[in-house]
Length: 210
Image 1: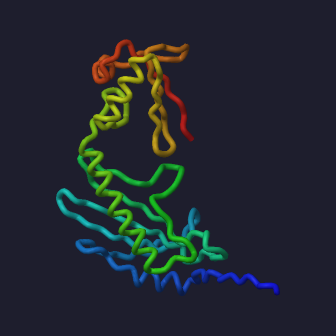
Image 2 (image 1 turned 30 degrees about the vertical axis):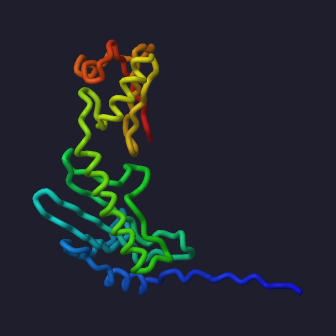
Image 3 (image 1 turned 90 degrees about the vertical axis):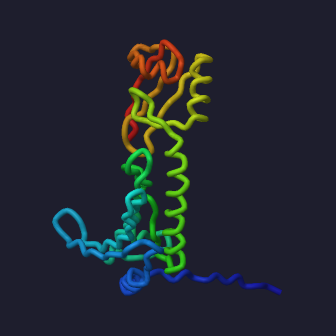
């Protein structure tokens, strides 16, 4: 006796389905919803922006979704919208976008209003976690990075033992490698940086991350 394996084909969205999804997206409590049409020009295709915003003195959040209505959705992996999340924090405004690498989140061709709502709620939870971490973080003098007390202690121990530590941007940008040993292209860290980690001398080298 032979059995036939059956598969369920995922139904991907059409332009009408994307428009329906845009209409169904509901703002979370305390948020407003705006829809903006960006016309096509010589540089980009037209798209529709759905923005969910919360604007309170210590709680500013924007979750934007750029929907490309003319996308021909051929598989569940095709992207119909790119999401961009920005929020206020103790260390200034922050975003989950990684410059030149990836956006905060994506809406794929097989998405439903339920799955999109889950993505929105996930962004709000990520913001809560990030704000807690950023509230405990402090800036490294002379370097464009933040560290928590636990991370600072770990880096200090590593540097004191003679090892190096690398700071890398979340997206495209400049990375820094610091150590007690100065290489050919290394430069001396500022006295503030050395004082911050309690290690001297310290040297740094930069690297392009793109």
